[in-house]
Image (cartoon, rainbow over all chains, first blue to last red; front, side, top):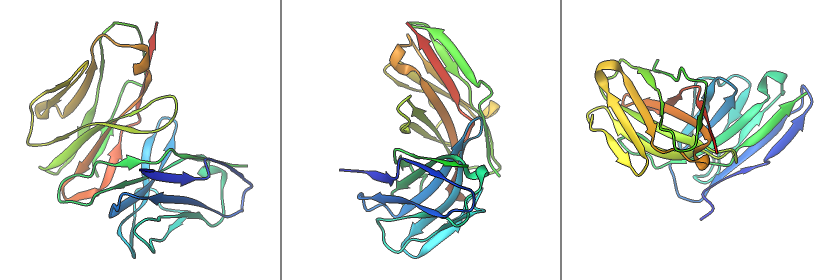
Length: 114
Length: 115
């Protein structure tokens, strides 16, 4: 099983450029989410989805868009990149159930905005 | 909103020493879940343990043990006889039953185990 696959692993952007971070999972998980990891701040939730066609904002959603057209894919879009979006991004998924979700994470995508 | 504090930014120990990583949490929910994740130098995040708020039993898994104390809102993680392979960043996290789609992480503790 591939688990959660993120692409690209590394990306350098100039301020104002747009890009999409891809995330795909093959575990038939209902729940998917995006986190960013910054030094000294842990992981912060950007957006999440509980199923195809359903998305919601997390703790730090500004500057990011998401969509969930299929169960497998959950892309994260940066419409106009800013240096403050330099970070490591993690996609995660889990089975959606009444208890807490144990997240399976992707390998991460390191984004640098110049 | 819920909050997780890991006051220890970095810890350095010599191999075979015991080390405890502290985690203090804040929540208004009576039902919640606590987690520990490990991030080795390779960068991936690995799930270690989950504990729900109704289960205060301590847990031991090999050299790892977890001490959950609701009275002090703490969920500490101890590694016994540390090894170089334990070197990693460790994250404590919390999610509330009323909003279990929003998992909040602490800032992480970087553990370095020297040979």
